[in-house]
Amino acid sequence: MTTRRLGSVPEPLTEAWFEAMAEAAAGRSVADGVSLVLEYRVIGGPTWHLAVADGTIRVATGSAEAPDMSFHAEWATALAMADGSLDPLQAVIDGDLLLHGDPRSLVTARDLLDDVGDLFSNC
Image (tube, rainbow, N blue to C red; front, side, top):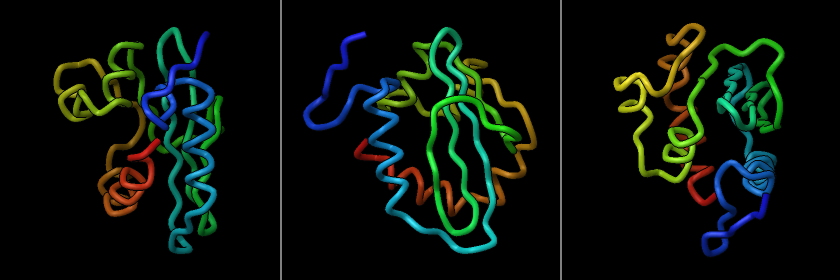
């Protein structure tokens, strides 16, 4: 697969994109006591996860050992959410983004998720 860059931003869902997110996460700290693991599965594509624990944020490819929430989407849906052209809530409403796990963990971590979204906005 050829990696296309959009300006200085790697194409979403490529190895370069995951590396950019991991690098951005490595420089960010969060409050101690916050713990959250989110897994993203692209049907027919990559699986990756975000883990928040011990004051750090980590992004890695592959499955998470015990995610609090897991998100499953087809390639086109995942790509549209990654490039910002599709709101994830709309994808859930339309049935294009499937949630597995306890969604209350997302409500509890809302401020953290807002910060993470800002962190990855340039990836």
